[in-house]
Image (cartoon, rainbow, N blue to C red):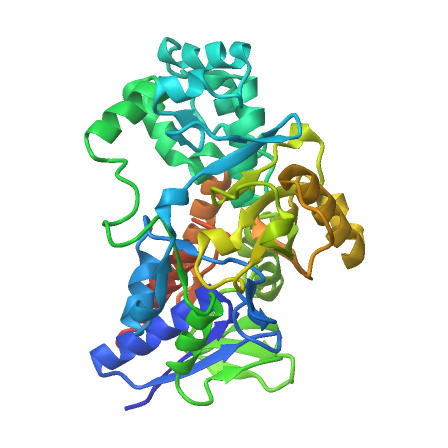
Length: 472
């Protein structure tokens, strides 16, 4: 039997998930598979990277995935990592919001954009009385009559008021998408809230009703918390997937310069000058880079991909003796509204949120800088970013002394921006792909940015490609 040859371009989590799923499908269907995974960097994993330093466990990029979206959890268990999965201590599942230079607890029951309970909001110091009254207007405001996509910023401002946007929605959603809420597509990022307005008119009433109906139960099953990580850091997932690929399938430090249609399939041009001929190709890199690769094969597709902007960010790890921090650290971390005028976006109490992240007597913090609204900060040197991060967390948490460990990791152009109209663009991309048999796209640029979404995207691309190539 002539093997089916498939090339996966990009060795981040989406590319690895696609490659692994292709291997599974070939095995289950009894098909011979010649798989090649090409990665431009000298390592796999993309932004996922874990380091151990002096007893600290450091995740340079994502440090967890969410269990509500089941694809990453299912994959981890399927590849033998079930015993390595770790949940958070949900007794400490609290988020703080900075207001007036102080950390104030996010009202209990506040779900990203809107509250589910009145009393916690009424007694909260996150909002002014004017802001609280404006939140309550959601109970009587009519539905939106206009059609078409709306920005998340416009939606929250319209339903809940400016203060709800500036004090809660912007920092919480900014922590997920590193984006400007006035450019962010509501339909592409928070479709649940769009549906709540359509079905229940009021977000607050809708959240209460769905909670009573069990639709907002949280994590998928009592076994897991909302956030799940791996005992040895998220790079365990990368290593386990890589180990399950065929020997010799992965080629590191091998950028791809172009792909082109061939008489039978596709021609892939690696940087080493030796073209590869494939029945199918999965493009799993950042959308702008993939646009450049397909420009010769399909200019309309290249234009659509090139229109997906990407923001940059940096993760800063800071470790301190626990005795040097006055704050009780009785939560998972805090977010910083843009209106506070600080350099950092958010901070996770990493060694509180997950076990085994710091030696006894020490605390590990993860601080986030940059994003679409503070892109200029990333022009500064690492030393300056470290100082900015230390100064902000020291003043907010009451820290004395310098960190005993510090690291900076930069993530240039890794966060796709789901601007208003994003889903229309994705639909147009998918329409173009229908005219290009044997080509699939995967990654966070399309229908979800988290690890779970990237796993789903990679596996779905593999399944579509495998199905379309049956009979080759």
